[in-house]
Length: 304
Image 1 (cartoon, rainbow, N blue to C red):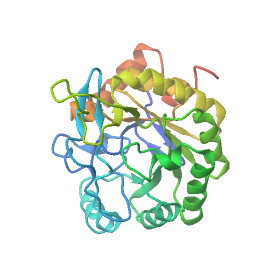
Image 2: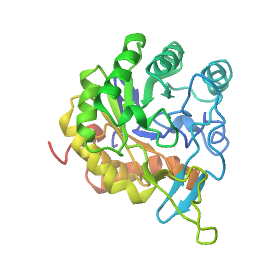
Image 3: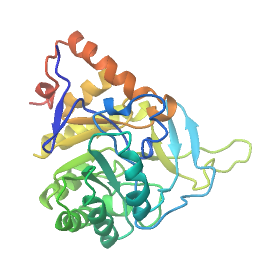
Image 4: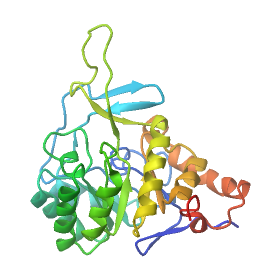
């Protein structure tokens, strides 16, 4: 029997497969397709202090080997999440969940993180300093090492749960930002978030997205994500969660060889609601094919 389990900041996961924030909601939409307790965990919808409608429509566009989104952090706000979404989630998901935290100021990140940190079902805080679809928040903090470190320090000051900082690929040197977060006390890193992209309608001669630009995700970005995970994992001593274009069990193994301890699946959930289930079910066979007995043995295997 192969061993698919991994440990993420002291919490054991049955497998390393984690649906990414923004592609799995709060689990409600997927629980009727399959028992989501087979997941390692999942990262729930990015949450801010106040509820947000998000950007104007259209805010989704298809493109070759991927998709663009400019949803703009639509969410009901942290108090609603605590009073409604988490009690509902506890009825059908019986594992620690990852809370994705967003903000428009250092103070907002800390406030939202502190509230979610108190919730017993939250196992980790994933601090998104990398959203490319909102103005004045998200990526504004994730493209500068000092700003990213300031958010990390503020959240660590109020949180007891492990803090993972979600990094943007839309930077000159992702390693410098990763190391700044590590030095500021981060317990782990998540990368990569979406790349910036756009489409233009040939009929209207205008951008397809109302926001003009959006986050590009899907299989087309996998080689870029892999390269960045490889670079960052080599440079830091804290765990890395790899993501970006993951669509198969083989992709999971490749991400782990690059240095990821766990792997998030994003856009593929929107293409196929069974994507994570199918990846998890295919993982033991893929491990046997490549003569892997224990997944933790291969973490960083491409450079160790």
